[in-house]
Amino acid sequence: MRGSNRPYLYPVDHLRAFAAVLVLLYHSTQLVSQAIDPALGWAPDRWLHSSNPAATLLFEGHTGVALFMVLSGFIFTIGTLGKDIAYGPFLRNRVLRIYPLYLVLLFVGLTAASQQFDLMLFLRALLPLSSFGPVAVGGVWGAMFWAVAVELQFYLLFPFLLHLLNRHGPGALVRLVLAMVALRGLAWALAPETLDVNGMTYYSIVGRIDQFLLGMLAGWVFVRRARPRSAPLLLVGGSLAVLALLWVFNQLSGYSRPTWWRMVWVDAEGAAWAVVIVALTWVVGSHAGRVSRAVAAVGERSYSIYLLHFVLVSLVATHDALWVRIGGPVTSALATGLVVVLPLTVLLSWLTYAAIERPFLRMRGTYVRDARPAVAADPAPGPRSEPASDAAPVEPRAGVPGR
Image (cartoon, rainbow, N blue to C red):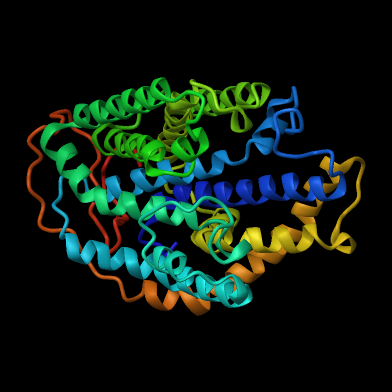
């Protein structure tokens, strides 16, 4: 958090922290358990399974990426709904947010593997307009770069998507989601045997755009609708839906099986997280005790955590002296992630955030133009938020309901 002028964004920062830690523990559990027991792996018959929904949340912890995607759409929308975006200043802010740490890690990774340097790959990485897949640029240093590419593509599209939402209402985004589902389904029908399902649905904007759009729709609901009395029940229902979906996904070995239903999985996953985001933000509101602020501080550094954690997971996985051996390989891997990888990553992220991210974040400026009435805005009264310098709403006006 930047300060006390944004109290009701604490739930968003909590979810950022949760998503980053979840992805970290997912990679720790998968990679360290495979290092301990090579019989485990990414193949369907080696994928980690459990009948316990809590365990499947960990085994399918890649869902933290989906949560990040939905959060991006949500955060930008609640700060700009009903407004016009100046495209140049908007992109300038995004460059200041993403590129400093990204470029540092890119050059570290390329110099660490200088014997494998490829000029064209470097140029593609310098302007990440294509998704790279894991561990493609700079070895483990670039393992998470594919997500940066997908995010950047969404940033290029967001002002236009916001224009659609402002002028034509949420139906315009719903139609876009349905169109993308249809197009992915057509791609599957044309080449079911050769289609790279993970490449399409997981590593690219073709699959992830639905989750951004669902986040924008969640932002529209949050801004245009007052907090319902059923918000706590909605939070419970959304959380249970996430667990149920991940349990089914785990039982079907979803990530390691390229099947037709993966074309719509991104939508089910994204919709469940969208419900959780809106409901949690409604329920928690502006409550911010010491623990809440501490968790929010971790969320503020989630970008560093996300980009750096794979490097430390890889380091720990190759040094058995760092493993925490408790029970079997999976339990030991989880313990190692919690006791070794997580503290090291958080400490390093605190340093990179202070030294690399924060100086450039302070250079950001406003990109939201004067408010203009949205043609398709819902006439029902509801909370509205003022945009801050980086698509984050400031403290709501006194007396606004639902906060």
